Length: 284
Image (cartoon, rainbow, N blue to C red; front, top):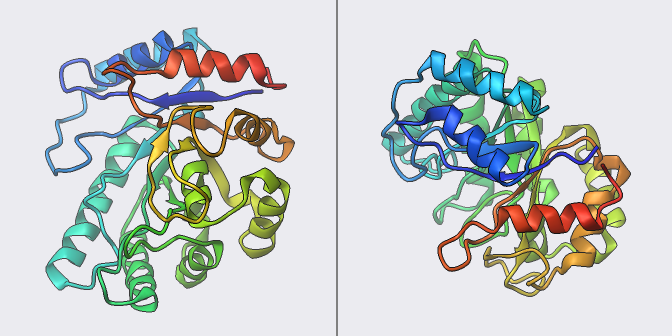
């Protein structure tokens, strides 16, 4: 089955119900959202009555709550060893896990972090320390999905070995998964025209069972550019044919696929892009 959706908004007044309605307007059967603005700490209380109404609308439209993805805010940086910033990131991640659990969802996508000049090994050790600290005191069942990164600046997670190093160091390994991002993989240097080889490499290093979400994005940049600039489906250097082959890959068949492509003239392109993908996909 093709489980396809996009990033949608989450507003204080319309809450989760508004997010579901936006997803349905795109003819999606999953979606991803932030529980508040990704650049700040402002979070509104969760209206459980609104959540119940959202669940009913999801059920009526065959959207499974197990396929919904929440994205952690960008301001969490577990790789920064500055004591105040490290502690802030741990506290905020803990709160986000509780919010995802209150919504009743399973997955929280997280950018591993940036070492801000301290080196990859130092950054990875900091991420491991943070995840162990957070998960030691966490009572939810939410799984943190470490996202594959493009390697821009001092980003950690630019290759599978860096992600494996994080997982290896974390005590609660069952609480960690992976979110693949096609733009990030391309920009990090992975040849997506040979995606079966990429998957084999991932399987050998981490294991395919860890993949719980895929961000489907084209890229404005050539392979190995380390820039991370998303492009609309079929309009970038990855191309429609390669993206469709990734979406159609049987090993990833029941994994939610989320579009994060740019708005076009201020308008979300997701309805048209989802339709384009469905027209070209072998999955139904």
